[in-house]
Image (cartoon, rainbow, N blue to C red; front, side, top):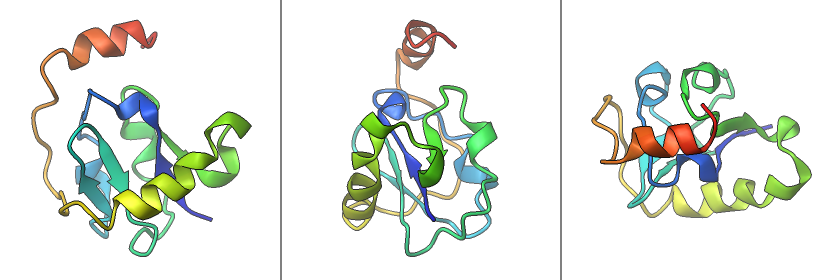
Length: 101
């Protein structure tokens, strides 16, 4: 089992989830966050923190989102660790509204 970030995070990059992670599994990509499955302990602490519902346990992923498991595994190896809450992207709140949150 692993926890993954999906495309709802794209162009938002809210980071409330990051500060809830006890093992620093989040990575800061250019346009979104990713979770390193080799670091994540699947505690689920981050899931409820995401204001755009971008984070799932892989077992709860809708079928059309299962490719995000591989995306997180690959992309998390390319980007630096993020451990502190940061400001979201400009326009993130507009995207949040557009996503229905």
